[in-house]
Length: 386
Image 1: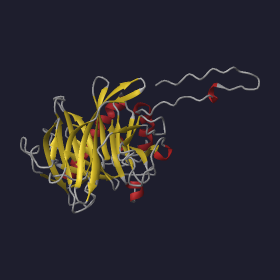
Image 2: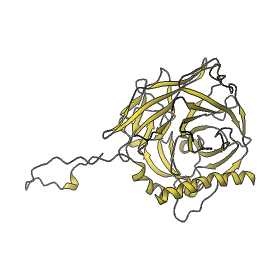
Image 3: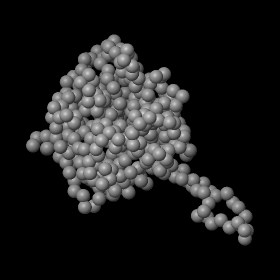
């Protein structure tokens, strides 16, 4: 608990220093076998069921590997950012736009984000550490922090950036190793999923900030029940369940559905589950929103694209309940559909946050692919009745 409180304080320090830089399942019992002189088997040799991956059991080693004791905290670099509101900001205005289908959500605000810094863009994953702060990742291997208006947690005001570092402490370089796509954040430890070199790594941002180095979490080379995927069709979505299990989603569909790994066993993800999705859509992002009663809601983003229709986006909600055997997913429902001519782009990241009033706030962000024909859009919603 001491570490938890300290890390929360250090995580706030990450954002504070960024702003200053701008201004300047128990084991199965083994089957009983008669022991004879010809067949003696020790208890250690008998197969044991592996425990599922859990944040509380794994995080200690990840903190240490990502931020060695002799490593000093390094603040991210402040960069200029401009945010311009997108159409539909009035009450009911967004909902009435052509190409918008919304149910169960209230549109709060939307922004087109730009920066004179050429490193800004390609934002494919997002997390909400706390009210008024966002952490995003770029598919060129950067962390990007956004500071929002403190009162409303809207209107991005400041930004800072840091290049992800490999296990050797050197900056990641090249698309093969730096194609970051999914992001999950807890207690200052950022878990990042990468495509091309399909893997998940952890970064202790609370203790080391921009100096955090990659600590290996999982390699998808060891995954079970995994469909054949392309370099650019791997672990696009990443989340942590309320009890600390890793949730991994693949962009490559299987029988039209989105393959899902819930709380993989130790070092092997197991894609035994799936999320329903509309024909032609692919999973691009998700977040697991925790409730107080052992239940949760898995929010997911799904994208389709072709040159005639442009990008199409669906935001889904899937209720979940935890049992001894694991998480049971309920019936998925659509909360949002975006099609042209609505202001829509390549949305890939989603984050859920509890508001001070106890409501559910959703942030979704688009990946502009560093293209002049695309935009970095940040949309903010509130779940109706949450």
